[in-house]
Length: 396
Ligand SMILES: [Zn+2]
Ligand SMILES: [Zn+2]
Image (cartoon, rainbow, N blue to C red):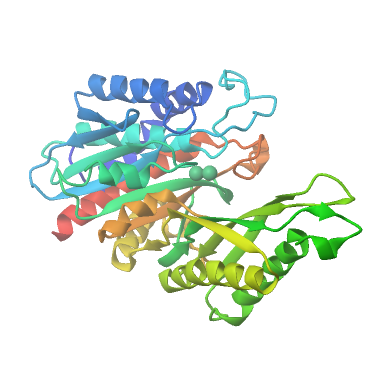
């Protein structure tokens, strides 16, 4: 086939059955981060059938390259891991076979779309650009994007842009939701241990009680959020865990808090990562205690390159119809390790592919045991990616 808009639309539509098979095959055998062995084997077997060259990285990651007429290259990434979430009953014929593990975020759909894109592009006569497909492990944790970049997947061939999509149960099946600029939050983890001196609950003067110090620390950090950060720039600090002490009449010797720090702007991320340890040390010192603070940097701020995002928006309108493309007005402080590809300075963008079908009860949120997706939406994902690649090639 020729890489033309109408041909892309038709070819993607013709892949519906294959995409469903890919998705269900992967859905039945969900695998956690860096353990996606069967998933990687399946990806390779499909690529072999298509005679598409591929290589393994990081054990379970796969990079496929379709060589084009030009050395210019466009990259497309799909994450491939599942979650430790038990699947809700139902799903005749494609139920997870692994107890307690399921594709509750829809990454099975992402792999299916990328395999469908490989099939579509492999049938193109004189592909105008080289296309690299990154099947990435461990998005749900501990993160495979940054290790994949560190393993050199962007070095040869060197893409000029990297695209990705995420299925979205918040949007109607077959629609596309797009946002330009800062779109998803950075995600760093802080663990603070307040070290006091344990003792008898009735004699606090003989102890250093870490519990009220921990309480002050939590409120002081929330004050930091509202008093030191520009109020029109969103940040979140959530302490999801606090542990200390064993019983009512004993003063604990330590309390440990752990939380997530999220920001939509790198300067706010740096501010919080500097000020939270400062506050923790100062508040502990004021009350005769000490702290240890462990800060673990996670996923970067997610920024959709404006020019690249407009190419995707135009492509989506061309293959799906303008009425099926919506703009997302607000960013999210959810995080996404795809943006590790953008941390290198490359323009990147991720769009959402709607997969909700209320008529069939497919509306559950991501990460819920009831999450599912309407497979009829998957060809739209292939079409938008292929048309975006066509437009990027034509623009060069
Ligand atoms: Zn997820
Ligand atoms: Zn996800």
